[in-house]
Image 1 (cartoon, rainbow, N blue to C red):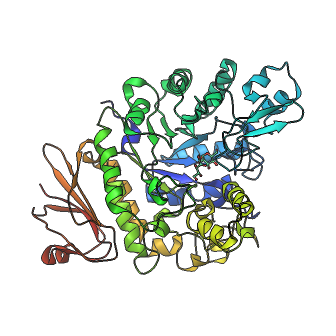
Image 2 (cartoon, helix red, strand yellow; image 1 turned 180 degrees about the horizontal axis):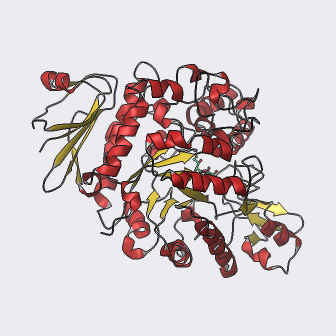
Image 3 (cartoon, rainbow, N blue to C red; image 1 turned 60 degrees about the vertical axis):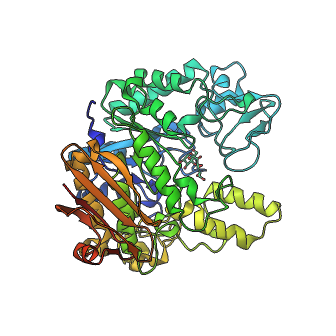
Amino acid sequence: MQKHWWHTATIYQIYPKSFMDADGDGVGDLQGIISKLDYLEKLGITAIWLSPVYQSPMDDNGYDISDYQAIADIFGDMTDMEELLSQANQRGIKIIMDLVVNHTSDEHAWFIEARENADSPERDYYIWRDEPNDLVSTFSGSAWEYDDKVGQYYLHLFGKKQPDLNWENEALRQKIYDMMNFWIDKGIGGFRMDVIDLLGKIPDQKIRENGPKLHDYLKEMNRASFGKHDLLTVGETWGATPEIAKQYSNPDNQELSMVFQFEHIGLQHKPDRPKWDYADGLDVPALKCIFNKWQTQLELGQGWNSLFWNNHDLPRVLSIWGDTGAYREKSAKALAILLHLMRGTPYIYQGEEIGMTNYPFEHLEQVEDIESLNYAAEALENGENIANIMDSIRVIGRDNARTPMQWSAENQAGFSSAAKTWLPVNPNYESINVAAALEDKNSIFYTYQALVKLRKEAQWLVDADFELIDTEEKVFAYKRYTDEETYLVVVNLSDQEQALKLTCPIKETIVANTDLDEVVTKQTLKPWDAFCVRTN
Ligand code: TEU
């Protein structure tokens, strides 16, 4: 198998509005990110996945792009972007851009021209129909919006201000590849591809994900842009199975490096229910089955996994699956150890490395996220009571991941000098912040730092096979083994003691959040105990 830099990389996701505000307007910006590169270098990450910074009316915080080759004013300008690239590269950090090409903003010049001029080439860049069908938007309501000027409906699988692009149009596809090359020429490290599995949609047949031409488009995109360079490409694919993930990520297919699969994230809500109908607690046996499937079915050389608990669309993992009370630090380390020692490329979402938690949202007025707001409006219309709606938003709404990064115990958590930030700072910032984490040698931060370093240095993390070990229900244990070595990873995913039979002698401790001697003597795991050892 050809080795790439991203096989041993850990990626750090930045949500620009919430990372660091340098100009004091209450919103994060590029200069803010630049000012924190030393911190990221200390953490040791190889690349930053930068959520969108392009020009945008920010209806969906930048996932609604009005110019792919310009920077949003609130974040800075192209000079700042170039400075970020060069300052990051000097520290050995690559920048992965977010590629949002399923849709544009309705304020993109293409859409404006498409609406105004029936004869323009741009008209066919979007998807128009005389009559809507019953496709619904991910952000509630019909996926079709009537346009007065055109006298037809356009498709929007997300917000009304996010019209879907028509990938059947060859000229449009070429424009996208040209835009990708513009960024590649600037020296970026790759692309994270927003809802990439929707590109092959056939709205008339109500096919959204995994349409028949999807992989042709990706092969074409690969040939026309990143294929000639050693870049990381990761597709966001909510509907991927291991079989589908192999189609994307098998090197022979020349499509993408890897995809984000969301099967484990599906455990956050009740089966076959909308995400708002969240599940109580973590179904550990189900989680084990899912990771076992992905780890064993994406064989080395035939596919590659990405590993994540968090992103900007998800609740904070500690709040939904970990512990935010007495075991906050321990459960954060346990979840990190579980994830980072599997095969794949791990992703850390800003604040995860210091154990940030959900925000205690109480009123709808505190909510910014379009998905949550549209859901609330629809649910209220259907007679749902506001307390239940707020309960769902508090547990699973996207704004939980988007409150400002907590840098210190100072005003606004050191994120901004503004009196009011775009989303409020979590009131727990006085104890949960970067400054405190850096001072404490036992903090979550240093466990992440150790895992990132291990990922760079330990070849077995790439090569070794995975085998799930049968244990107590709430214990997640697996082996990674090569011909020469065997590593054992054991994680207690509960706040109860668990029995453990350690049969092999420990040759070397790789990482642990607990006193291993005690575990061995008592053959018992304390709440949230986690470790990795080499057993031969
Ligand atoms: O997310 C895709 C997507 O489907 C999400 O809306 C997701 O399903 C939802 O948040 C989970 O409930 C991507 C981006 O990551 C997201 O931020 C964008 O809003 C969306 O695409 C549209 O670009």
